[in-house]
View 1 (cartoon, rainbow, N blue to C red):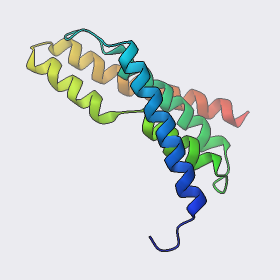
View 2: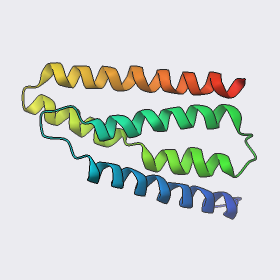
View 3: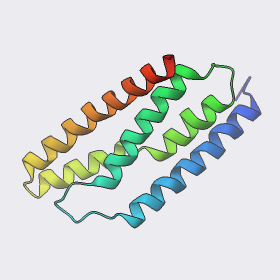
Length: 123
């Protein structure tokens, strides 16, 4: 890794660890039943989109808080891959409407959360 900033790498590492621990705790406490709406994943993805929308708009590029909270925390908190597997499992169990609703709601709510946070950060 030529030309990397060790403090920035550390910020991403610490933020990622905290985000991952937060997601794991939420998913452990709120495990959904198969065939039901996966609220834990949905919630962490929407919260992560909101936080990232705020951080990306508000914090300067040269602030270590940006990689700590944006790349690290939000990257560890959110989980696109889990959402995809949940959708796949819904389809495999013939829950097509649930799968389509979950996929659509995740995209729309995530975009709305990022937009609201970005607008809020501009004030």
